[in-house]
Image 1 (tube, one colour):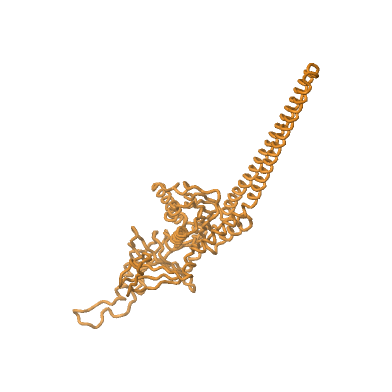
Image 2 (cartoon, one colour; image 1 turned 90 degrees about the vertical axis):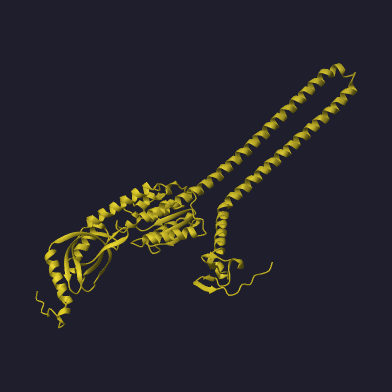
Length: 476
């Protein structure tokens, strides 16, 4: 083998030992003779890096079973073929190799006395990666359906007035910028309270990051109407996290309705499927929220118009009733006048001389009755005019109330925002009130602690630990 070092060191015969380098050369020869071919293997990438000067890539490959690592090996992808292999992989899958990805690789086995056993990668099959992603995707769908939570989030009621929105997105993503710009271009967007909960939206850290964002949303004092998850699109590999079981389970079991705008060009993620409402892009989500707000405002204006029409109809009906009363009164007076004249004329000739004095008295009575009737009609007309004035007053008051309604609604929202700021824990702590905790529970009375107990004082930039030396209790 060309190895010139002496086989044995100068040691007593009973302790003669073979050199490590010689033994490793022997093992290397055995390995090279036994594993001359190339082999296709599957393994998960736990870590990989690139040597910028040589262009070589170095992989750590593992195999796990029920979360326990059962195999480990190192592999090399030499710079001479790396550009071709990785370029083909990315063009087909739409994304680069990332940690945690399972690959199908063609490798050869090599053994080096200094670096140990390793694999040399000659090719990577991107179709296997896509197929594996699709298999994992179908397993996630089957699992969510078997657990009975596939339609859970869709069962939530989505309010027509979506005013308080919690957004999960990367704060530097173009999708978040598009979402904000779409809302800002519409005056209706000013009526919405939108709060961003930043999250990683790509890679292996996506799942825990989104979970932390959701936890912060539910810990917030703001009673959000819905959660919006948006990002600016990407390749199938980039968006594979939104097919993971954990993220989709978070969405399905969320107590708030979830609206997604993840930005798929062609495919629909499982996160889209389990969400209450799915839209293609962040801009489409913003437009969806604006349309619902516009519908609410339109309904308010329609209600104002219907109420105005109702009041107008009531006033018209009152006018008609008054006119009918006036007409009936005039007709009654005319008939009364005719009846009395007929009576007078019929008795005039017969009783003119005999009851002249009595006739004069009857005429006087008639005048009194006419005066009373005229007075009654005047009083009724006055009451009707007062009623018409009251209706006009109430109509004008209601119209002023409706015209001021949007301003009062915005003022009330400002008041709610101010109350929320007053109750912000950071503001409370700025005023000098800090929480004291023992064994994870807040301390509010001296009876909850004993001497020697260890306490934690929570501050805005950290916490302090202290022991109770003395206890002084206020006497009642």
